[in-house]
Amino acid sequence: MGDQTDRLVVTTLAKVAREFSARGTSAEAGVAFERAVHNVLLHADTWRYHSGPDEFDMGGLLHSRTGIHYEFDSVLLSNDTLYIIEAKRHTRITRQHLSEFAAKLLDVVLGSADQLGAFAVKPVFVSGLPHIDANAWHYAISWGVLLVSPSRPTPWELLDLLSGHEAAMHLTAECEALCGQLLRSLTATITLADSDAARFNLAANAIYGTQQVSAVLESWRECQSAVASWTHARRTP
Image 1 (spheres, one colour):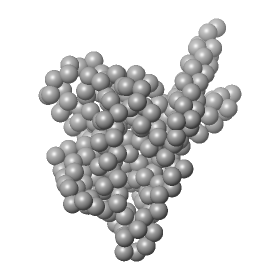
Image 2 (cartoon, helix red, strand yellow; image 1 turned 90 degrees about the vertical axis):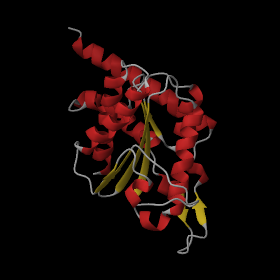
Image 3 (cartoon, rainbow, N blue to C red; image 1 turned 90 degrees about the horizontal axis):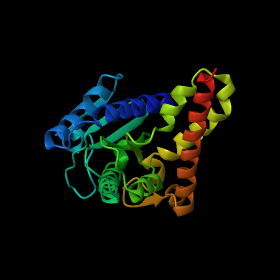
Image 4 (tube, rainbow, N blue to C red; image 1 turned 180 degrees about the vertical axis):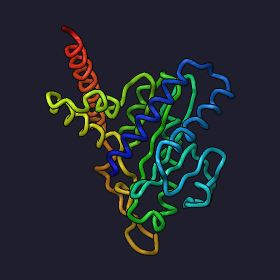
């Protein structure tokens, strides 16, 4: 169930990002992008809960540890997963954009650990323009934040190309493994250590180091290249 919903969320976001990639960089275009991200996702499935742009604290569902009120562009709750989505249309996405998103997420996860319970919390940062700094990719993968951009197809999109073809099972397995590395739950990284929310456990190995990030990026490039070659070979008489 979760994997199918992941696929729906990611491929829908990728489509919206591509549609907006050719538009201008005005503030109005940025606001339109944020609203489109939420509205398209909202109608893509049936959600137990949702909140969109201009709603603070996820519509009152959760609160932060510091008491600061945060806005996220789209929050969607399925049966077992809370998707938290940030949408930006800046001329260039930097590491700072990702670290600010991660800081908000951590504050909310720490402040609402008792409400979150067994839910997975999966963060997605979607850019409506293609220019992403190398450090932004690195930071996102390190923390398990999926970064969606018009410049790089996600493994979920590659899986759509391979769907139904038994001859591509080895590529399918590689792409599926990559999905699990790119989009990870924050509630698996940080967990309550006691019922009073006074102590938390941090799974340090869930935060990828430089070598792990480099390996994931290389696997992503290889997967993209292999699927492109496979698709080209199928089309060639």
